[in-house]
Length: 247
Ligand code: SF4
Ligand code: SF4
Image 1: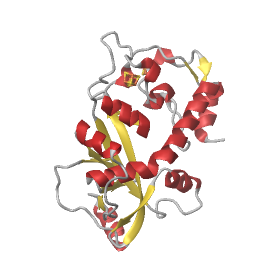
Image 2 (image 1 turned 90 degrees about the vertical axis):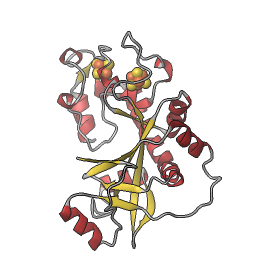
Image 3 (image 1 turned 45 degrees about the vertical axis):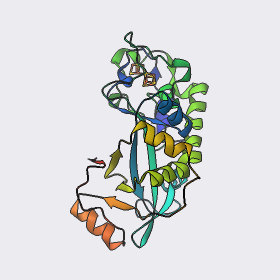
Image 4 (image 1 turned 120 degrees about the vertical axis):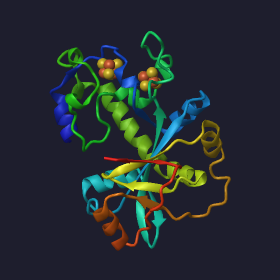
């Protein structure tokens, strides 16, 4: 049993419909949800992170979890894993949020909207203090850990992560989005145009399959040295193509 599910077993929660989770964030999407989001004309951010077995040893549960949701790529003279997160841009607020603070696509809302405030990553414990839900939503309602529908949605989301990992990275390569941050150090965040990203997804597999060389963006000097020591290529120039968000 994970830390997350242990915590959830003891936590009561009932959504009060405040809409706070529909504002000021990125909403991670499966690939099919990404298509639906883009076809509604709304923008999707691409967040990229990379790692190898120096983050966790091979065989460690965390390594296995993240490897299954990533794709192997070439970076300089080394090989690493890249995770591409496609996320609906709900900054300052979700384009699907009505003036009444209700979701206008409620029956079709993304999995992550159904799962919040639970964590999808089994290695992140549920922490009510880190969530946007107001105090009155906690300590009432059902125990989160015994909600079977919620558990199934979390499993479905993890499965989609595994199913989509390779294709999401291929879409990034088709779009030329090939600079990732180092896992745990930050994310690179790209904001492709809606129509450009939609076309890349819809034509996936039709392009020539060249294998681009990825680069890592890191501003921490010690991390840069460690990555260069492992023969990875670094992105050293400033670029307007992406934002580097350091954690
Ligand atoms: S899709 Fe609906 S539930 Fe999800 S963030 Fe937007 S308004 Fe909120
Ligand atoms: S922030 Fe929490 S309580 Fe408010 S709408 Fe989202 S899930 Fe419900």
